[in-house]
Image (cartoon, rainbow, N blue to C red; front, side):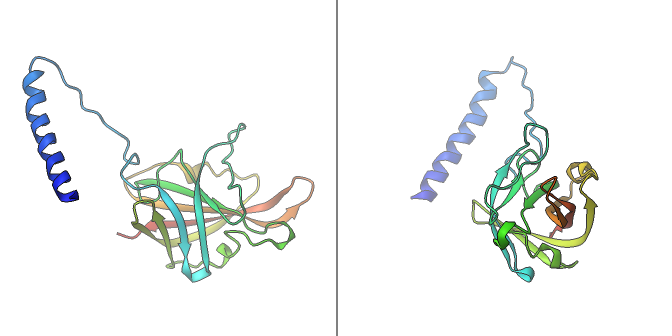
Length: 188
């Protein structure tokens, strides 16, 4: 049944492609260009990193009122920045997760600090596909050090950036002293 519907839909599209230009012969046509990250990769649902026993649901995240990247609601979940490319699309997809949650409650990225270069990260999507990434490196940033370069979109390579808290907890600022950033590239 699906095949018949698909064929019928394709016939309709072909007929439309032929009929519309004939009907609009004298009308100028402009091409619609979408950014490469729009609709080229399915919505991410789950991040899996088997080598360090991480599995977490992914929720879409935006920016806070002061312009900072929002954080996942639950310590068990991670989130991807929906203002950038989806994981697997060209550019730097950003995924954040909690670690070191209060009262020793397990958090999504507690084991991220154990991740090593050449280990694999998997993003499962809403369409049942999986995007695979290989870890290239990681580094620590001080709490006040800018993370803007992580969000810069350059080139056609699909990259993944994982971010979590690290270092010492500062009770006064209610924040950790460092951020752990993992850099990974899509496996082609």
